[in-house]
Image 1 (cartoon, rainbow, N blue to C red):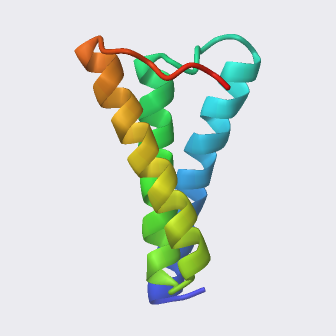
Image 2: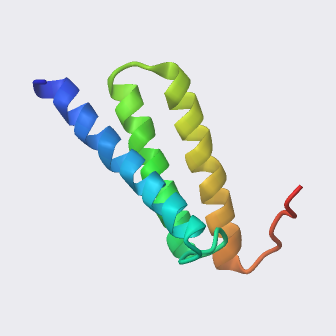
Length: 89
């Protein structure tokens, strides 16, 4: 791996690692899905995974991770503002 691809790989691994860390901490009941740390891990993780996918021109994951990051950003803003949270359905 050299140059562009190695940087995309490093960024992607970091993003996916953060997403998995949030997931595992939630499963272990150490972080609630509505908590700011959980949402920040998801936002940064999805953002990095999106960037990595963009760098390697893999649009399906740009869309997936970009949507994940955007949805998490909305949830984070609502949480920080103390607004209503969507009901699980």
